[in-house]
Length: 312
Image (cartoon, rainbow, N blue to C red; front, side, top):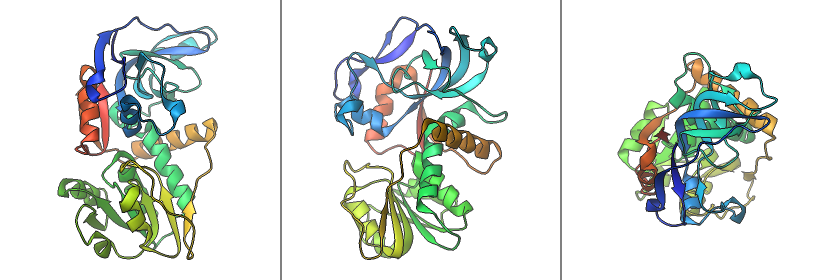
């Protein structure tokens, strides 16, 4: 099978397409013929040898990729054979997703609802549960003003929609006009370019900040919070989290770790919302599996919008 393998940490070019042996389904596992694989910012950090936590660095050689969608090809011992042929999305346990076939624990796959495109289901598998969890942690109320950074990204675009659906006024922050246009299309009331001077004045005071950038931008957004405001960090696209802490009537929200059961429930809810037309995943760009290096380079250049996917 074709896979994008990593033999040494470094630049995107270290991801090399090569033929690997097909995996087999062990006891309690199933095999998935992968059609779509998710690519994340964290995976670019892992590839570069700079993971957010040392424990995330794989033993090399490795195949990266944690979220995939496709059809169940076979089942191992102890797994219902009726699952074969079903359209599913699943995590892989952290490795192996950039490949044409992957073995996964049989407890992980989630059925894709009828009418929902597989690309959108893969885009929502992790980002959907993250966005829903962030909204729960923030406790957004109708009439509040919410600032969403990286608002045209995979998670940010979903938070824009969820906050709008919750009755909040949404201020979207992103870099470049084409990303602001995406945020407006998703329902943002105001869109500001945080690469330009004066963006905080345009945004104004807010009740909730969803910080997907961190660093200086996250710190500037923190200063916009009104008393009683909540600051929710969900990313560090700048390379570091914002240097903020509780104080002056403002709370830094730190969500509790999600159990596997809760993660699954949130992902299923996100897929159901998408199938019902209440949540839209933005798939901004796709790459063939053998161009995984190009996908990583695009993410690192900040050229991407929404979700980036590999087509196997």
